[in-house]
Image 1 (cartoon, rainbow, N blue to C red):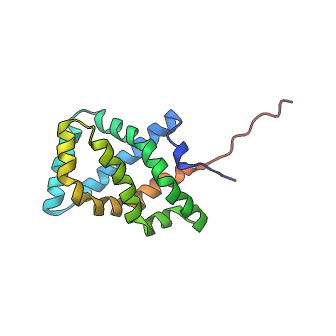
Image 2: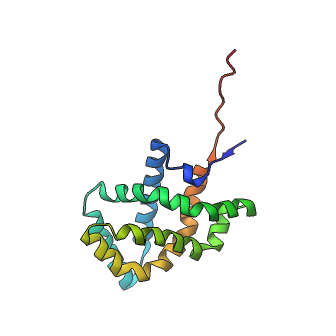
Image 3: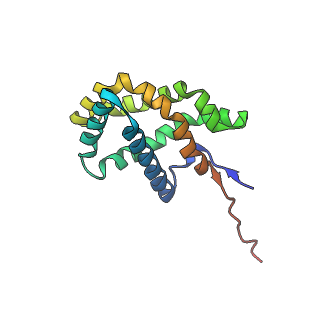
Length: 157
């Protein structure tokens, strides 16, 4: 039997948060690499600029965004659990989920360095459909983390 873990709790354990950040970064890399056409080239170029800020930059950004993102997505996730399949539910409500995440990144981008803020503002209006399209994959990344084996505490005998 598995214990359901709340999304907002996933970033509270450093090792778990670190693995989740790595999984999210892998997903972002795959999503950007899959973009085609002129807009894909522009997005890939912007992504290279941001990655060029340092090897710790994106993991740090994702790590800082993660607690707020998980907390913001939790009501949608809970609704999905009640409906029987949170991944399918997030997929069905992908625009709502994307808008929830973009509200957080909008707020955080205001405090970012000028290069990141400029790149973000340039692409902000066009990324909502991309974030919405990525929501099923994001939900699929999150789902295994919400299923935890119960810990057994010694009975003291």
